[in-house]
Length: 364
Image (tube, rainbow, N blue to C red; front, side, top):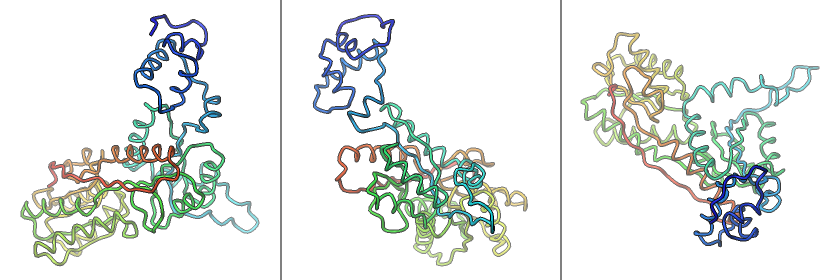
């Protein structure tokens, strides 16, 4: 490759070709991701791109590759459009106030920030970028489908927050490429990544038992979603295997407020409990807050374990012992599955299941 200073004008394919010592056609094939190019030549072209400061024309490239290099990152719920009052105009789904409650909940949960981090860290080195979309109403879900059908993004990465969410099925029915974070509650022909939730709950149960806890309870996640069901099943099954057939439960909604309410109910009904497994860190943080308010020491009087190993686990006082869900790695894998699938649209769907790990801190 020819060593040359960066060019003063706007660099062209011809400039890159001269710097790399190859033809313009070869440069075009490398930049457009054609796979049958010698790796040595690919590296020479990449170095020439860096040397010259060449930036591909995305519009022109899209005409060749039929790709936008944009990926829709969709946070979806199962809501419906609000009914307008008599004589009032229909609510505008694009109105920023109409979805304010949903978006506020999304941004308040550290889980979603970790998903974004994993997706961005995977896409950015590949010259691809996410387009964040919210699909909390039927109209918003239709907008997502239209956005993809119009070719505004190459596919969708979907994080669904509700078991009844119809969006995964809408995308597959439309033949649009998509990958889901977490196993769908209903049978849908869609690839997904997920965690072995029951194994994670087993780790929590065994740790509490090893500490000597015998009067245990659990704050579940929403029991209409697979993760909530699996974490409860794993905890209950492990406790039963160790001679504890009855475990009091209180259902939460994966929020700190619901964890506080659940902990208050459990203490009112079972004031002698000495160990609590909460199905996520925000609910565990809420449980610790209530225990402190009621004069219970954590972990001396009541040991508490969360789930996810989110930023809430470190912020909690005391810091939470928790089951780690490698969200960033799972989100990156979701992006990988989607991008790989774009090159073979007739490929079979698949699933990738990650393993949890127990992270021991001060709460248990």
